[in-house]
Amino acid sequence: MKPKALKLLLNLYPPYIGAGIKVEYIAENWQETRVSLKKRWYNKNAVGTHFGGNLYSMTDPHLMLMLMQILGKQYYVWDKTASIEFIKASRKKVTATFQITDDQLEEIKAKTAKGEKYLPEFEIDLIDEEQNLIARVHKTIYIKKKPDLK
Image: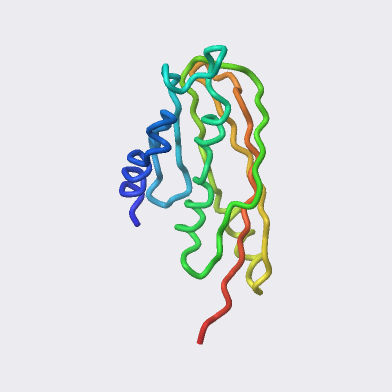
């Protein structure tokens, strides 16, 4: 799949539409994705700020999808665990940027070369328009190279 096609599909995905989440950018090499969330009347919480579930939802499942595309069909890639730390409430547009570096990819390939599972951890900061840290998401991804099928 091409990044532009996935971006379109995700932006038409009913849960993302209902939450007000928008995929703004996916790099051609799949190593960067940017997602945003604007506060709307239908996605705010009881005190008028961003609903916490939507803040988490904007981070799911981008790392998994990016790694699936980069590593290809010869790897199992799944979300394993996630947690979110809410830091500051906001009514402003919030953005999350996901990046997978060449060093991280080399480490993943080295750690899984003999068929072992590897559980890399990632940290995603959710930042508002004023560059305030709104929340931090910690994600662990399960990665394992598939056995050679001959």
